[in-house]
Length: 269
Length: 297
Image 1 (cartoon, rainbow over the protein chains, first blue to last red):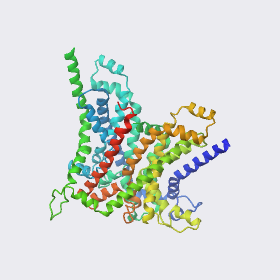
Image 2: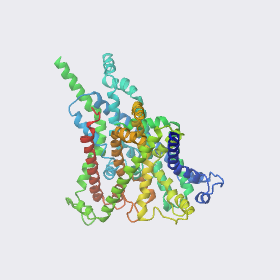
Image 3: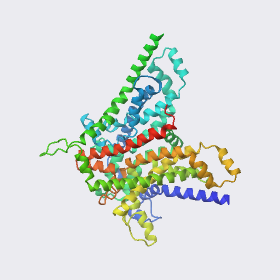
Image 4: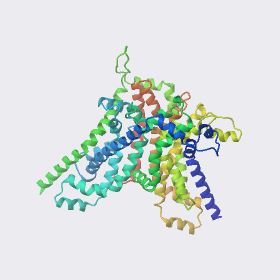
């Protein structure tokens, strides 16, 4: 009876897994077959790479890749700097007004940048950052979530190390740089993974602030490429979709354990 | 000594504010100020060539409440939240229980569950387009094997929103699974052993021991799912564009459409303020009620 139960568990789990992965498998299958073979589900039809070639030539993908890559890099660098400084202030310094400001920061966890698209668009245009990569990235740099995460990480650093560094004559910023930052490396890694995959996948805000292939990230490029009014067929769309998710997907499959751990660490607030 | 302590206190205050400045400037520019200016601009009329902008108080809100589309969108978003939150959480829990248990092919199972999480919503929509397209799509192909008629899942008002909901659940469940999985791994082994010795059935063990221990995680996930039910709208751009006849339109999409397709910023601002209001209530509930048990300080 127990063995039957185990069997049913495995069966259910694997069935759900197959259902869950099937959209991706179908896309892979469609991308590697001609359109008519794909839509008629001819299982033994020949494989082809043509769809990838057609898709690649249909849009400036290389530019999109570079844009997305620069975007996530710019955001990550900005976040690291801001979040480290603010996280340290909240974790290790006492000063009047700290608790009030901390509540303000926490509020930003709920006022999503996504909701403020209209006013942020006005703001970015006013700053002259419309249709620039910096304009896409700026609203995300002072990440309340990141500040919170680093604050927690820095709070875990033993005060003795701080004292020892100070007795050695290290200034406050020196202590931050030489003691706290190295000890928080795992948190930085986790945060980096979450940040990169979030912004690699972000769509609505980049759609609003970009207006040319020079700045457009992959997601926006993909949505324009696949728009029904462009009449691109399903096999080519599948090929384009797989191309644009490939870097992140391959990275995920290789570093699966770290990825999952990163998301976990990021979620435990 | 007290002079020294005083100096130290002042030094900390200066450093503290200096370190916070960059983050506070950006937060003010892209979160606090926009929130205020959204509230402000929601009180003014939309300027046209003939009618200049003027203060109309709650005029935009009354106009919004009189707009039938707004109520359709609200209803859609409530259904969207009401279905995606519990269903994706239930699936996430089942996934976690399985992925944590002794089953075959566990590595594959975990990877399969989690993979949708790393895909952009736009890509997910493209993948599902292949399922939904009438005549060509996989669902129709499977249906035709059983002699079912072709259904235009995305093109008819009765099914469009459900098609959107399914994509969201597919995208979210694996992400939520991770949190349940982490929580499950903190449950001590001896609880299971004790339950086995007592001859407790697996169902009772899950219901009476596992689920109560998972409660904090469940609340955490529920809040995330609630926020996502406002935020996750990217797939609308590919799959339905809110149609047919607004049947699958959600709030954030409507805000976008209002501002960037109809160029009615004041209406969009009024709607934004309402959404922020709802999110603020969620935030307040979280901080006041739920954080009694957590470890912020």
